[in-house]
Length: 201
Image 1: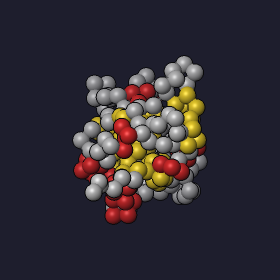
Image 2: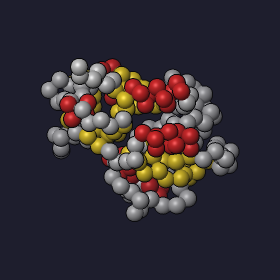
Image 3: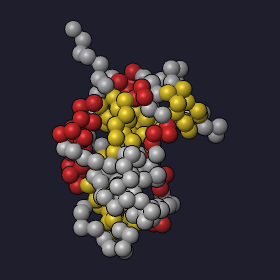
């Protein structure tokens, strides 16, 4: 008998709770090479020390394990970092500081996670996507997402989609471990078949 097909979920911000703190503007020192972090390009050679993210004063104050933001970045707690390391060796983790609305640095340790594992995993025939006019291999918007065999047979527990690198795709096992077993918050997991680009924000 063949093994049952793995279920996959999309990692998105938890925007349903107003209590969560959210990141504000991108730190100036990241702007030049920011695209490398959103595209999963190795960044150890340039990522600066002492990066501080300010929280958006117009949002909540609860610090989550994955801090919601609109910059397509994964800024996560130490316990979530430790968990992700158990599932993949293809991460870079950069220590960052978080500054609250009162101008004080929070004591909790946070890291910017940069996943280097990328798979050209979108079934372009069955999915409903809008591609870039400048580069048709890149997707700007997703209305319906279907993964191809390269993704479903990769054996990877977590990966980016090469055509849409903002999005992290995880197995059901990892999603359950993060949310149920460890109770990490600030993020949600949406079944791939239900994903729409608007859910990212």
